Length: 107
Length: 116
Image (cartoon, rainbow over all chains, first blue to last red):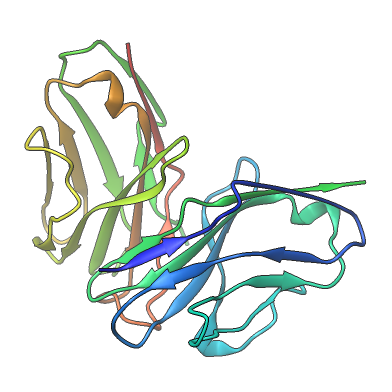
């Protein structure tokens, strides 16, 4: 079965501090993982995908198959990073999302 | 170009009534998805369409939920005899092709359904 777990529903950090949003997955096949973000009053949108090994808006995420994790990290948080973040796993025919983490960056 | 659109943006209904939610995908996108976003439940997959057929209906929570897609474009999600637990934001997404790694899903703004 496919499962994505985001253990933190809420995360609050100060501007300039490092941020790490945790994501763990369960999947028998080769995982394809994503982070989606939803800013206030905006649509859910793709932030980054693990296969691209890219850094978007200063965020990176590394797939760790040994720990079955795909944590999202940013070294220095900015106020505009405040949003809802969802980790997602691509299954055979659908994306399976975690429950989401609401990130708040305090000034 | 226009993104995914959904209507209505908000719907308030009474328990027991039927509701229809509409999704217009991005033109040319063959794959269409419905999700439900509830407080504390995250994003829950409901159904996936490839063209007009639905290869995966596994996420529909009960037989009160149904969806169709006509002409490979517009989709309607119907909830019959609504219950209070159906209250949620219903999101639609589309992608250029079937859900493989490089086919990004583009989301609509959602329909907020409130069942009184």
